[in-house]
Image 1 (cartoon, one colour):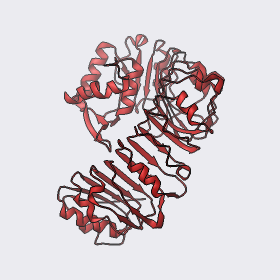
Image 2 (image 1 turned 90 degrees about the vertical axis):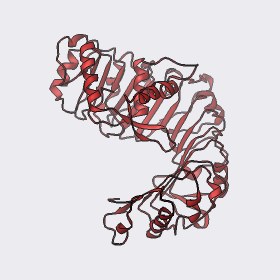
Image 3 (image 1 turned 120 degrees about the horizontal axis):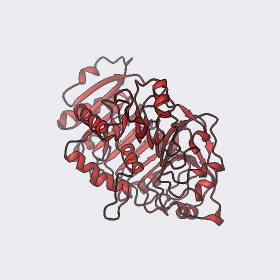
Image 4 (image 1 turned 120 degrees about the vertical axis):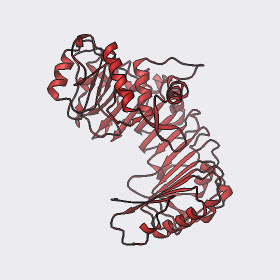
Length: 457
């Protein structure tokens, strides 16, 4: 935790990937390292108040964490004394040559960073928080390179040659040059486990990614997409370690090939292109698909806990049969629909199991439900619901409901939420309005459990 900036809020998923890449963890009871990290290591640190919970996820898991600044100072002193890592501008340079880990802070100058990296022939890990610096250690034995953070957009751009010069990387989180292209030499990174890339143009993966990178666990592309080729069927080699695949486009791939190639996938994010039936992936827990107009109601695996369907550019028709199939998923805890157009602009619900529901920019006027239809619902998030007449009053009868988040919704929705908040005083309602909203009465609705904020769209 000491490698992060002061007052920095740390995404738990990123922290755990760093723990794994550094080799700090040992499996417990045959569970994966990532599961062990969450259930044992992280839980233990939180119980001891060494790591502070900053924000819970939509289904109650720890999403963001941080540490107290006084504890961070202790970590720095111990790290300097033990030679565990070097923080640029904070630690002395004595003995720098033998340091294995270096942290480049936002205040570090490019000259300081370049000088230090040249003096670190044995560096194994580099964590860079400075968007103006492209860290390229002299050491070819680098194991961890983190110069991009999804919560702080921006990163210097690397070329493929910058990355394949390292012979044993396990963790790469970088931004890449707009001319970046994968070639067959990419398979030289045969030991890499985590690849997180910010790219400004779509890129195509080589065929070798399917059969010559057996250690891959997590692949994430941000901003633009990674196109995955169809695996060569004569070389069907299972990528048994792959758990996360986000920001990808599939060439047409059948479900049989998919089940053979990535049988243990847990998190799947497909931006566009065809999506095969997912009922063959019996360990899949999270699915996000942005080509929702092509989705059919037979693709879903009963192991799903989180499901997001939507589009960034167009509206798609959500069919009643699809909603019924989703509602029947026994483990589903989180459902997000974006730019969904409900038939006749009406939604008649049935019994659903999820704890978190988000409707974003959906075309919906009438919502007909009963409290028994959502026996476990804890959080409701409505975003851009301009046509919805009201939140059904039956919602307030759900005993598990804890909070509403309403952003840029119609005045009638806000007023119905206020009525529910008055009836259920323990319910927390947060309303975000446009700064140029001309209804002066809406801000006056604010109360202890009804928060009103203003923001730009």
